[in-house]
Length: 114
Length: 115
Image 1 (cartoon, each protein chain N blue to C red):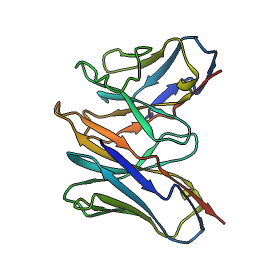
Image 2 (cartoon, each protein chain N blue to C red):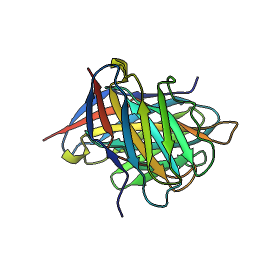
Image 3 (cartoon, one colour):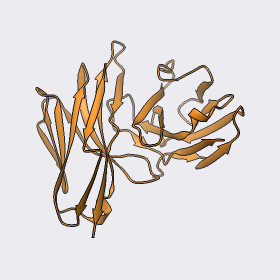
Image 4 (cartoon, rainbow over the protein chains, first blue to last red):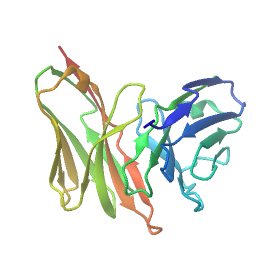
């Protein structure tokens, strides 16, 4: 079946603008994760959704970052008033259920803030 | 502080040769350790997952080892191929009080296999 998809693949935005990144998880996967990967650095955990439970937002770097998920389907990551340090690849992953299971990653969205 | 350190940062080897990548971690309480391969412009793809009781696990030409006492892991690649050129990321899972397993990612080793 289809893997995790993300859109757009690339996004260039001006400093101060808001951006929305989209993630479509693998069908049937109840868990969804967002990560950020800055150039030359490791992945940073941002937020985790598991079914209808309250999301774990402990990795969000500031209140400019927020994410939503509709049921067990698509998720959007929103960055308000973007800053240059927000430039990174934003990766989404999904897993069957819970964090013990294998995570399958999407191709990522490369965000560049000018 | 939970940390995962990998070495070397980058590595160049000739096609057909073997290589070993290292991962040291200070993650507690430990749940499992994963190795991912990330091709340029792509998301990470899982190679192996090892729990506390597993010392070694193979996936084709990839063999991972785990020493939970010294908190070290290695990924050995045998008979390297050009397609092995990628970043290899070590990820350690820590169990939090909530039961959530937070993944701690290393910065990766960038491997280049040259013809």
